[in-house]
Image 1 (cartoon, rainbow, N blue to C red):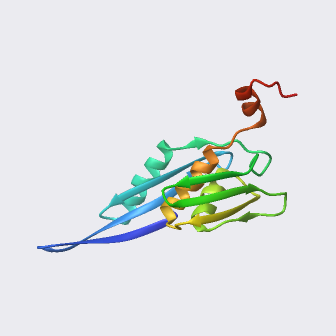
Image 2: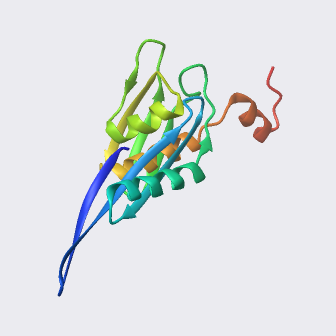
Image 3: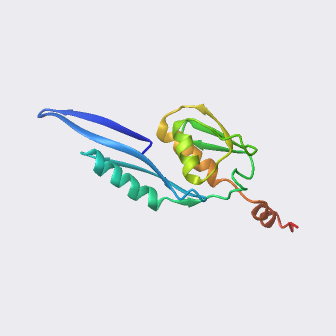
Length: 148
């Protein structure tokens, strides 16, 4: 669970509260997903978010315990720059980006957030960046070049 938010709607009959939850799931071996759920109770919101996150899981190419190359992730006004790091560096990232990166199984990475820092948008921007990653073999195949 990355974030739980309480929302209140004021009506003629009074105030009604609802909750939203942002959840990240992953196997720590290259698969990760983000889910967002809303409900009247916190556990229901978390369950909905987990269900959605499992549906949205994507596979990410890893190079050892880092990413293969530098990449930008953009979602709405949040921009996240992801850069591979050498062994022993650790995860240098904010809270929501860190959650996505940890559950993807990445152990060494440098990140920087630009623009808006809304936790949902930063998490989605991080995931967009990770989705954009390509291995050497994939790039060679796209360009029609044989990699030895």
